[in-house]
Image 1 (cartoon, rainbow, N blue to C red):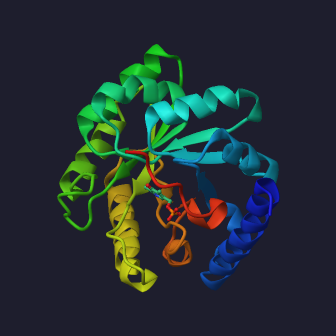
Image 2 (image 1 turned 90 degrees about the vertical axis):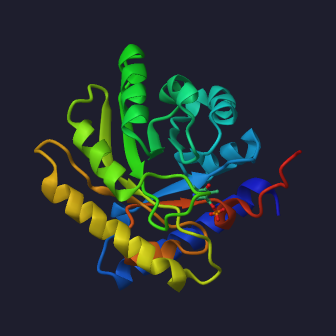
Length: 237
Ligand SMILES: *Cc1c(COP(=O)(O)O)cnc(C)c1O
């Protein structure tokens, strides 16, 4: 099948699965944002996503996303950064993205805020949490997450909207359920200690193979690549 109809057909099936998971947990699909992860795919995939009706795209490399954004400026896309953000790329990231899911330190938060203020942009950010304590994964410790949230009220252009987790990969989504549940509990706990004006209403959790479980546990943003676009091309060395 051609690319655009294939992505459109995949979107129908993903949307059905989102709706079923929402129904199972007494939630409405309108409260769940589907971010289509186009990392490693070309602009043709971004265009296919747009023609299928998607307007929220996720990328994990700043330069790669900036290129795709430049090629699709008229499409009204909201860009999400879901990868690890090096502090020297904070400015380009603040210029390119609308949402950044991977803030894991107070210093990165402040850098993004300064950049966004300079650029007269407003940014939504999520704090990425390392719930598994994995040295190889990015994300802040629970203590650092609390410090980032405390620092949020002094930001001018950045709004801290919630938390994000990327649990250790397991083929069995039930294995990741406890991480999703923990993220929601941590968010609830943080929400009780934050000042007025900070709305921690977003939980970014769940990918192609486990987004249904994530929705059952309260995800408001799911990040889905493979289930929409097919297997990713093998990375070039
Ligand atoms: C690649 C990626 C995704 C999407 O993964 P799929 O399994 O293809 O849906 C989601 N979140 C993050 C952080 C990613 O890097």
